[in-house]
Length: 158
Ligand SMILES: [Zn+2]
Image 1 (cartoon, helix red, strand yellow):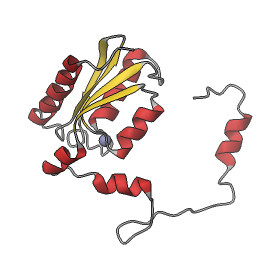
Image 2 (cartoon, protein in one colour):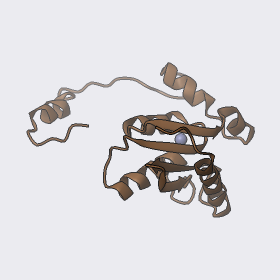
Image 3 (cartoon, rainbow, N blue to C red):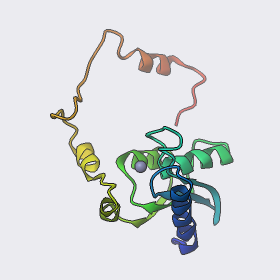
Image 4 (cartoon, rainbow, N blue to C red):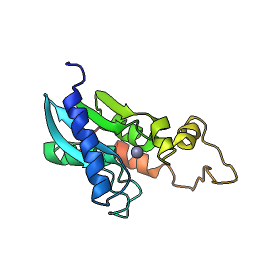
């Protein structure tokens, strides 16, 4: 595989600026690359879409999955204007992206009032605290979805 290409990062950063200028959301952009070509772009659309999950990386991944007609982005690379938050890291893992290149750091984002360091800390140690309850709640059939999945003969494992 080739190393990172600065031209793709320039597009990701331009996408971030576009999102700011269009009022869609925060200053974040991303592109997905496959075989040396951009297959999808995305920027933060949290405000415009009223969607807390519409981060640039998630938006770019959704657009790439749509463009390529698959949920599996193995062999693709993500260029993102800023280090991913925990949700976007998870999206990168589920999408099976094989490289993630980021430009700005979490510290740069914090300097622009986007501080996700407490989210990264929480993921390392998910606990109930004064701000949030995080606890298991079992019901009788809580394992039924897994039983159903195991029984399903035509499932598509991923
Ligand atoms: Zn994110």
